[in-house]
Length: 326
Length: 265
Image 1 (cartoon, one colour):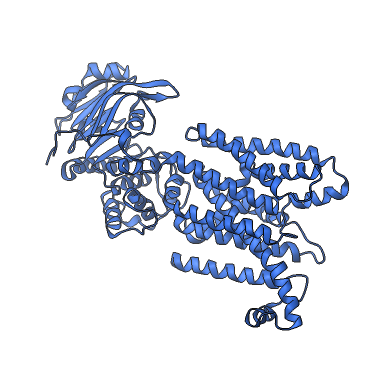
Image 2 (cartoon, each protein chain N blue to C red; image 1 turned 180 degrees about the vertical axis):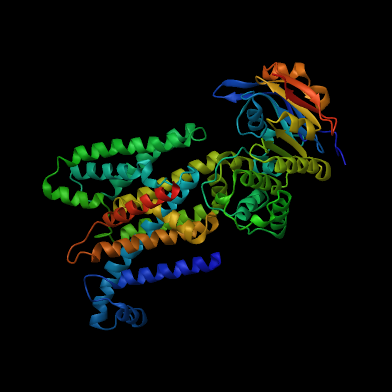
């Protein structure tokens, strides 16, 4: 099968998963035939009016949000794996999720109810520290830069835990749910943050596709082939950080998608970034939309944090990856 | 066809460079002309690879000047430099599953616009480079499935596809069997003679260097001990000074008349 055919196949698979995610849910008001009616006739009957409400206010924003979150995390992972030449790199390894979580719990401790902006600030602070350090020594030593991210993440996590312990049990439950990541209770505001981020981010990464190919195959060779290495590295890390930060801010921390999606995409469509950029976007979107669908349907009557689903898959995937590496 | 112009394609004058303020190269003069192969030899840590990094702008110069095709390195943009100067780096294991064809085609990066598909010329240069490095049937193979020697030839193929007049190689024969070593060095000589390229080759193999290069440069501790035709510079005093090894003796290859080294233990 040619690469183009594989990309088209992936696009059709994404569409199928999106439609399924829109049609399946606890309320029976919106199923596939009603979705078709709704799209054809609009909200023309009282029944379709209710379905329209479910479609526009619940399912569609949720699916769009999940898809954009998956795309952002996948793009971040793809960037960082190429830049660090490390198949295990992903946005959260740079401590971004922990920074976002810390920002959110500080805000909650101070009595805030909306945590989006504090979480964004927390992630961006960590990203800024990593970038500051990276401006100075990026070309010299990439592995130690990753370690800086891991260390900052551990620090943020320690503070987060210390603060959480002071919450009362009711608040504790909701903050834990937020920490594990969820698309529940979000709406068009968050969609308005993540979808443009995914579109702009995807376009920038696609523009950089050949420099990323060259970087992934060796930093010195990339220099010899005309890539401005430290510029691409800094820009790539900054972009991955922003994409992860807005995603954490809007949906909490959804682990492992940033790691899994690029690997799956490379296996499905090939390693060159010209194809693995669109591939990763679609695989990331399928993973998060699918995981969210599982999170809200597997246990009847209750909803799992989507991070629990991706974490469970991620663990198995991680072990398989290590096994293959050895 | 020997040199087409009297200006060296690579010209380094008083090149000083190193890492973190610690000077490794202490004022190196180096010239590589079109049509010739210059081999740089010397003991481990004498600054051979640092010289390659310095003349390609990978590390900053502490002093001196480097010109490529007469233009100061500082005035060349990254893409301009890549169109003039190709480098075969030392072997580093590949992490991602590119095919050999995709990998070698990346050598055309300096000639392509960012979103343009590969042109017919790009594909022609790629397949020619694959043929020259004896990898013609390898286009669809994954680079991760290659042996070290095959991977090393793929690295050379990418540098050749780059189509630059100046070719710098860091131990191109390090992982090759004797047959492919011979083929590789014959190819380098051919690239200089027939394609009029300027070739600088860092080597650990004194005999191969003496056999296949037009001139040799012997380095030690960041300085040049001698530069010139192999039979003039590959002498016991030079080698003893460079390698600190009195057991090295210089003899003659009975088949070619070129100098060669032997151990007298």
